[in-house]
Length: 166
Image (cartoon, rainbow, N blue to C red; front, side, top):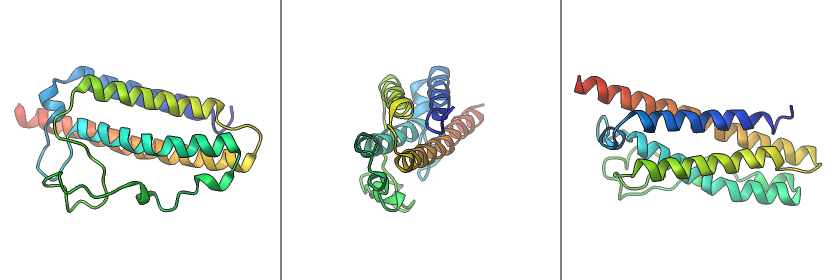
C-alpha cells in the first residue's frame, strides 16, 4: 500500500470516531464547554471542518498539477486567524472556531464529507511525481495528527462534562 493510500483507513477511522461521539451524546453535552477557555466537542469538530476545508483545495491543486512546492503553504498557523467574537477564547493563540451552538447532524455530516474528500485525495491524489506525492502525504499525515489530537480532546471534554453531571 502506498503512503497516500494508507491514509484511507486513517481518515475512515476519524469518521467512525466522530460519528460514535455525536451519536452517543445529546446536543447539550456536545455544545457545552468544561470552562470558558475550552472548546466544546462540536466546536472542536467545527474547527477540524474549517481547517480541512481550507487545506483541501491547495492539496488537490498541487496533486492535479504535480507541483511539489504548491503544498508548501508556509507555517501551519498561516491557516488560522484570531476571531475575537469567540468570547473567552481570545488568549488561546491561533484558532478557527465558529459559533458556540452547533447542530450535531450538520457538523458531523460536513466532517464526514471532508473526510471522504481527504480519502479521495489519498486514493487518487497524485499521478507520477514522487516529490508531489511525498508533499501531499506529509500534509495528509499532519492533518491526520491534528485531527487525532482534537478528537481526543473532544472525547475528554465530553467525559469531563459527564463526570461533572454525575
